[in-house]
Image (cartoon, rainbow, N blue to C red):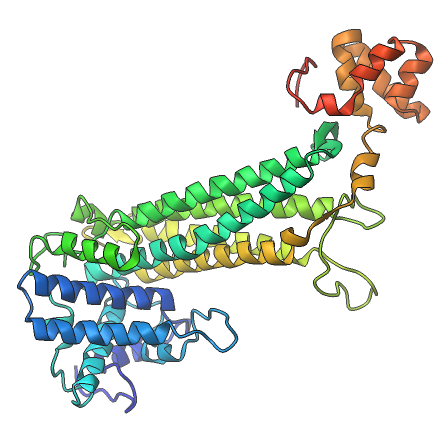
Length: 479
């Protein structure tokens, strides 16, 4: 295709540079997490080829050493201690835009070239010499972009879920469980349709949030398994495994498992694994559900913390920053808002991944050709959910305080206390009590006593708010 000038200090070669020039679209590169996963995959492929007698051990060792060097450099922490998945200095050697060839061929060759050139440097040879290893003949031996790129997106996703998202959700669940336990003795009024309902304990309310977090962990594990247990590697170009050893895929997966402590397994059917991205659509569906769960928790806490004088103010949220440039002293639920915006992005990512997986859009005959955008959206969702969950704990939930007087003060005034009277005086009469008490400004207790509808001692038991929070109530109807 003619001459191609490459920056003198670049570790990539002509194929990468050509892709950089061909795809000036978003100026967003492939996420670091996938680049790291792709390098790890190349390392395991080299080890498998050596073990299976497909690649000379000296050449495989050169590939492994180069991959290890790159992975070690990526693992160096940033000066501020934060993870910057798009700005690591080494990422300048992986400059190709997300919106490139739909198979990810450009990025696969980018990684092949960088590994080969690092091997050349380590051997004291010139960049571009393809000595001691060739990017195609050796680094890519027994592989195709068509099985390595989908494999590396699955590796990246599975590892991020296992090592970042699941621990973050575990912390979230524990924080919510601690609040549920600490506040289980506090009775407040429940609300349905944003209207007064029957009493509930604060601990019960938070136990619902904690259970949602535990279910999110189960969903994250299901997402991890959907990605890790259906690996395309070994299918090469169209799923037939041409130019690869018959045991190559399973051997690579075994080495990935050993290297990461996450269980990887070769796809049962390579034709499905390479022609679709259904496993990612499935995995991201779980991530979307986690995002939806987080919005429920964050929004409820935002509502319960509203005020401080003209809202519910049952909870006090930690003050993290001034809330207004014009209203002095205003503090807003900014952490909750951040979590909810993350969910908006994850839902949008789900739409992009779904579209990328559709037959006739991305999945065409023997190959999906929307893989780079699918991979980027998957990785972003996992990173966002992990970061948001950690932030939610550190900046909000751990220091969340209960305003007990506010939480308990509305119980006696609630007209829905009449619910426990319905089995005794009937639904219609109980409804009349609620309406008349509202008109008179009385509590249900005051109205019933004044009209002598129920004997006082029995009424005391019927209107025991704590009893109403336990199973066994006989109130008719629901909702």
